[in-house]
Image (cartoon, helix red, strand yellow):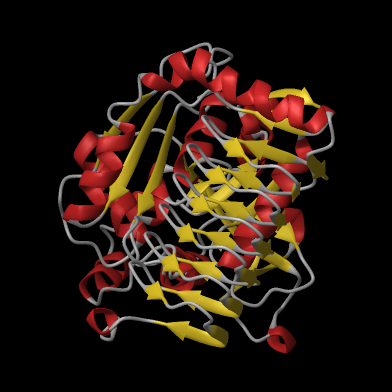
Length: 418
């Protein structure tokens, strides 16, 4: 096999750490830079020549939401003209699974996949030359290659210890910082040989399946290493990788990706220095022109890099810095937005300040609201003269005027069991 053609993406889990953004939205469909996270993964796989992508979607609502958006994948080539081949997306039958490894196992068996494949987690955004990973994979004769990344803070990740030729001799899932065997973390990107899938039909593999221990990092990888399978680590030295597992990491990834100024990432045109506009329709261009005129006369100011979605309205005396404004948002006058994401169809009145925060979809902010280091779920209404600092507001909440919420999570009764 001279190239990789096939990828699987497990799409399950409740994304607890991403709440309130993930309360009513599949993790794969949470919007970043005005598109779902999963679309970035599919695009990067297509750039790497992947032709068949299999989604291990768990749960009826999750399946329906993901399928309704991504369908069979033939839109990829139409939307991104620089992709030179069709991409086909297929879905896992509706089975309940006990981990991401079981989703991959089901996909491989159901579709009869019998070649090396890429496995990617659905909350990763990355840029990586998979051909180099495959070359390493073949040179060392690996059963499985794990893409690793050096980092100072390993908390929350699997950590690998390497031996000769980067063979992984030990793997610990989410160790304490002081107990980590190295600073090399698991990115959740793997190249897997059919031999790994055959493992699940062995005694040890069947035991993991029977006991519901089917998470790659926590169960499968340590067991493969213990049994002597050829598991190797490929250390990322080029490109980038982000785990969009928390709101804080979401904002970190957003700011980094903005500053790449890569058309393929932003899917936008730079019409003002460091300000990128999405949308090609006459109406979108009309809104763009209004913003451009305001920028030229100084009534709208930008700093850093900003992404503006389709049909966005910006009021007078507005300042935007290192932020993403999604489609159909209306931003009133005298507003200050810095290091933040405003998701689609949100309405922001006047004299609002938003700093290092995420504003969900269809949110209404009345005048003179301040939001700092906070995460607002979908369909939230925040009353005038309110101040939120280090707050989380779950979907559909209505915050009264003059509220002051600090270091607190507003969670309605219907979600108390979550």
